[in-house]
Length: 177
Image 1: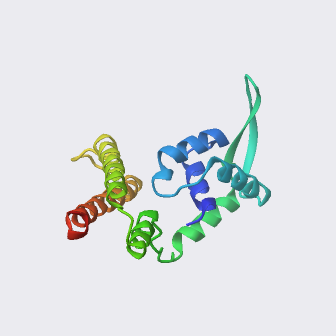
Image 2: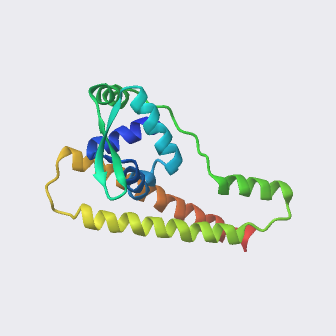
């Protein structure tokens, strides 16, 4: 997935300014597609030049704030991309690389970092589960769009649950006792 498609998706959900988009990225799309605010602004400029989005100004206390909306070519691009095939994404995790390096070095105790990562993943899982309880209560009829959004959230929950089980297994192993 590319940043362009992530931004188009977010802007189709709700047209907004670059600052609002960056905040929304931090709170929703950012759980599974990360981008810095600088990357988002740079991509907005490229997308505007390519005719995928349009900016319009709204008066604010500090001048004019640019809001972005998706144009027909942007929607078409997203539809083509969405109906296409994606590539299998390889794992790219810094902790796994640190573990490999610790194995090669033979002198580094990685257990404290693993426990810290375990705690961070517990926090993320708790956040996902809170979102699920709030946004997707059991027994409620859902639209197809809601079901798809819930499936994305469930993927995050399954990932975090699996990661925590793996971490616990590793930390209980002989190399960490």
